[in-house]
Image (cartoon, rainbow, N blue to C red; front, side, top):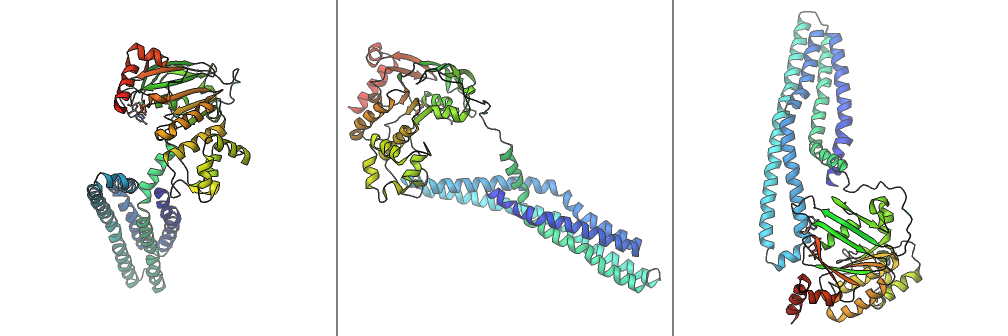
Length: 458
Ligand SMILES: Nc1ncnc2c1ncn2[C@@H]1O[C@H](COP(=O)(O)OP(=O)(O)OP(=O)(O)O)[C@@H](O)[C@H]1O
């Protein structure tokens, strides 16, 4: 946003001034040539050399300008980060430390700004010096030619007037360029963003017809590494979920559970392997169609700045008032929404009224109900809910999963016992699979996780 705004002086001021200056200077110096060729050539040479000398320092300015941009963006991002994370910084008594770091960044930014100014001043002062030199030479030569009679008094008067007119636009150009200098690195930053290619290409034209409702899912030998990581997040993940089956995926933190969801939604594409819905590769579905097939109740529900109703309509923009009422009742959200100051019209989310984790989760469930997708992914659905509400929400979720193919990603093993099947992940692949009783009896990783959690709760 900032970079776009910085382009304004370049587009709005520098470019029109540059066109007018070049044209004005050229015409004025051509007229002086017609009056006195020698004087005209001196004026034209100085008029050309002034901007050329500036261009010679361009590389120097560019280097410093690039450093200035990096410094500016870093300071901006870190200041914003510190403001947004103020509660965390205060809780860790780290706000003073972060404040000092920001001051250091600010000082570095100040130094980079001064370096850029110095480069700018040095390169522009050569050009500026050429203006009085050119004017003095033209006036001196013109006066001499008038004294020797080769130029009339009227000609000398014309030379005096037009020499000034040749150099005047140079001053204006200089001022406009100065105002626009930060637009050059900003323009590069904007171009960098415009050149970015999406990770995932939406090339499919029409969605294949589904034979089963709900459809089955097939994850075959998925291998995936986040671009910023060395180790793969998924390494040979294979899982078949039958139509209508409810499969729970468990595993230690970082095992790759949420990555499976990210790949199913095509936030990223797999490096190797494939995901199929009802036998069709997910890349054969247009992205919008694919995402309309999958409902997600995520770990942390994001509420946008808007009313409760607007947040619910995100799932189904044309939902009727009756559909909304039924969804919130089934998600057990009706009661707390009724208690809000303006009910459904209460503004929530950023800068609005904050809701508790459990209330947000109920909204997420209501959204999933409204979306009514045949495939459902519950990503740690009860992680932000207290034990008293957990049983109730778990019951609601069970109703929600009826008649849908469901993948439950869970940390709290108490929430997955009634799944049709539990699969256990470790280092990006499935290492165990079976019912709760089978897995506990197997004395493997699942039994270990259960023992750890039971021990932690005891
Ligand atoms: N956006 C990302 N960029 C880079 N690495 C990531 C990203 N998201 C996850 N990872 C890494 O990929 C691995 C798998 O992460 P993932 O979130 O899938 O695990 P998880 O089993 O869902 O963990 P948790 O239960 O803690 O949510 C981890 O090593 C994690 O650090």
